[in-house]
Image 1 (cartoon, rainbow, N blue to C red):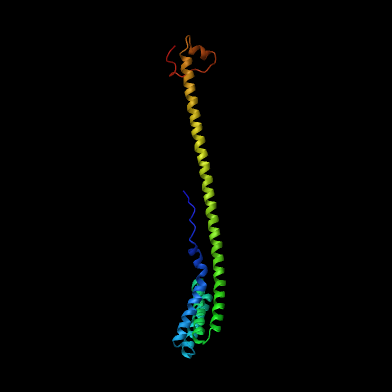
Image 2 (cartoon, one colour; image 1 turned 135 degrees about the vertical axis):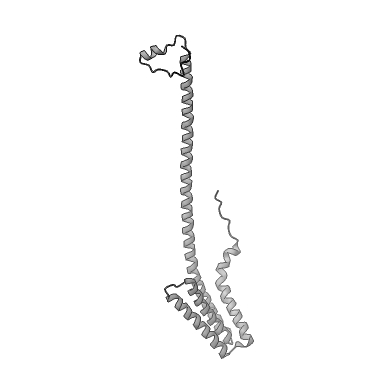
Length: 201
């Protein structure tokens, strides 16, 4: 028997919604820790993060233009490029203004991309639940029809049994009447009784 799925805990439902801001905040925090440990105004570190960010962006562009492109790989590459760029700028800058501005922009972009994914996921989930409901209704309809058919067959069989019992009782009662003559009935045009029933004359 089908049972309705239990509701998810509110933390499990809210975790995907908080993932973009948690990711960008983690990158910002790590970059500022790196800034405090010698990355501030370090041209070498800035060049390193710039090259890594450009390489990740190039990988995303190649993945998106290829014949066997994978949206997950493409999105991961572009996401890594943005994270590396944010980390490089936040680690190189000496103040909080530019890192916070880039963090806010990155968070908005992450939520915009995530919202598109969530919308597609909701649409697919709704379509799946609709198909599941239709199949369940079809199966329930077939089960109801089969139950009605079985009940009808049982009722018909009972009626046939009762009719056969009544007919046998009538034949037995007619054969046991005094002065019963099956030959006279046959000559009068009445149906002849079966030989098995004519045990007495």
